[in-house]
Length: 272
Image (cartoon, rainbow, N blue to C red; front, side, top):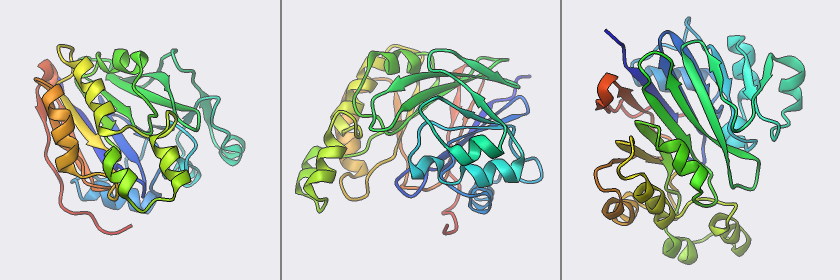
C-alpha cells in the first residue's frame, strides 16, 4: 500500500517561509525561513518530530531573508545537502556546506522525490517548484513571491495534485494602506507579489487540470484578508478547493494515491 506524500507548511508569510515535503522516507525542506529550533517547534505543533530523523536536503527558491535567512544554521545542524540555483549567492553556505547546483527547466532527484523548477518573475532570481513522489506520482507545487502570472508556472502546476500559491495583496487595500509609495510600487509591480486577481487568473487556468487544491499563502496581514482573497479567487477556481493559510501558522496536507487529499491543521504554534 502506497503511503501518502506529506506536506508540512512550517509558515508562509513575511516572518518566514518553509515547507517540508516527505515521501518514501525522504524529507526535503523548501526554503529556510526558520532556524533549527523554531522549525522543530513548528513541526512538533503538527505532530512531527524533526529530530533525530533530520532532513535529507534543503532547496531554496530565492535569496530573500524570509526564505534563506536560516539556511546555514539548518544545513550545518542537519548535515544535509543544499540545492541552489545560480541566482543565489549565499557565499558562506557555498563555502561551508555541501551545495549542489540545479537549473530551472532541468529536474533533479533526491531519494524518493523528484524536483522540477521554473523561473518566475520577482526582484530576486526566483523559481517555482514541483515536488513529485517517484513511486505513486503524487505531486505538490510551491510558488510564492511571484510578480505576475506566467504560462510556465501554470504549466508546472497543471501537473500537481495540490500547491501552495501566494495570494499576497488586495490592490485596493494596498493603495489605501500605510506602506510608503516606493514599497507599494514594489509590491504591485511586475517583479513584486501576486494580487488576488492575479492569483485568480492562475487558478482559472488550472481548472480542468490535475490540480485539486490550492493553499493560499504569503498573504499580507496589512494589505489583504482571507475574505477578500476568497471572494476574488473562488468564482474563477471552479472545482479546485481553496484553503487560506494563516500568516506563518503551520498546516499539514496529505496527498494520497488516487488523488485523495486530506488537510488536518495543527494547533496554534509557539512563538518564534
